[in-house]
Amino acid sequence: MSVSRYPAEESSSMPKRVKMGIPLVLGFSDEDKIGTIQPHDDALVVTLRIGGYDVKMVMIDQGSGAEIMYPDLYKGLNLKPENLTAYSSPLVSFGGKMVVLKGQIRLPVQTGTDVVEVDFIVVDAFSPYTTIMGRPWLHTLGAVSFTLYQKMKYPFGD
Image (tube, rainbow, N blue to C red):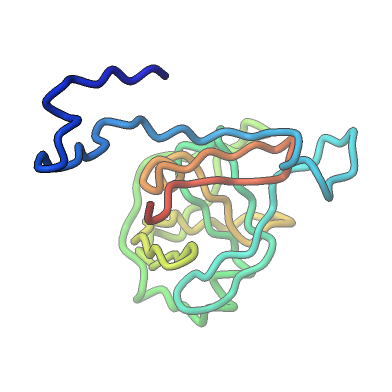
């Protein structure tokens, strides 16, 4: 990037220009791949703080249009049916079958120091994961995930 100087800017009495409008770029480099076994086709699975608890086996899925909570996490957080609100939209599994919905619940999800309120659809279905975090959460954080490097990045502070 080139910067042109105007004679008036050379004067020591002039205030310094503040950098403005610098676009934020989130990207991945080969350094991000260090520590992963390549090649692989693994899902991106992380630990997140959900509802005040560290929750393991959370799948980050850019293909999901909703955040899904499975029975193990529902029970592990000691949630009760009275904690849920109704959720009436149909949900179809990967196999094309209708999924039994228990309802919806809003819980805080902490990533670093950022806390986002997330609406989880609670389902009655088996999964090796405790929850799926999809596009609504990723977009709220402004996050980018990359399964090849098993990493997720999002803007934080500066």
